[in-house]
Each structure stands twice: as structure tokens, then as C-alpha cells.
Image (tube, rainbow, N blue to C red; front, side, top):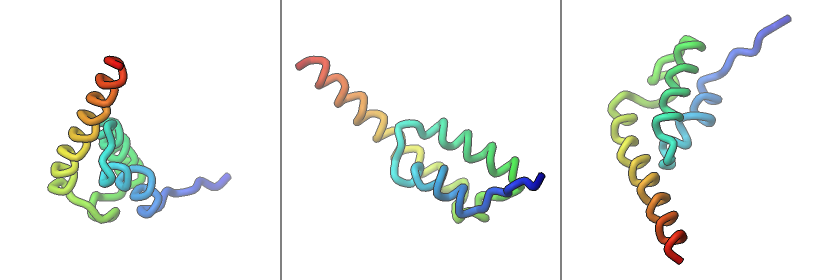
Length: 78
């Protein structure tokens, strides 16, 4: 039985792309990205990112989460 290895492009598409788009689940996506990188033996550089970029993306994720929470608050008051 042959195993299919995840490609760096798959990790980019599944985990890094949503982080770059800004996701309210930043911590979850980051944790899963790191886990898959370790499992597959890739580095952040292999998928076209760095610790510095991930740190910058944290604020985008926080903004997205805050926006969603605010929208929920507005909906619940109406």
C-alpha cells in the first residue's frame, strides 16, 4: 500500500492561504499548519512564508475575529 505525500502546494492551499486571507480561526490554522509541516518534513520556507509573516498575519486574524464578534453583537441586539 503506497502512501501519498502532501506537497508544499497543498499545505499552502489548505493552511497558509486562509491565514493570508484573514481567518477568525488563526490559532487553529496555525497549529494545524505547524503540525503538517512537521509531519511532512517541510519548512515554512518550503511553502513560501516565514515566522515574520505568520506574526503579521496574527493581527489580520484578530481583526477578522473582532469583526465577526461585532457583527454577532449587532445581530443579537436587533
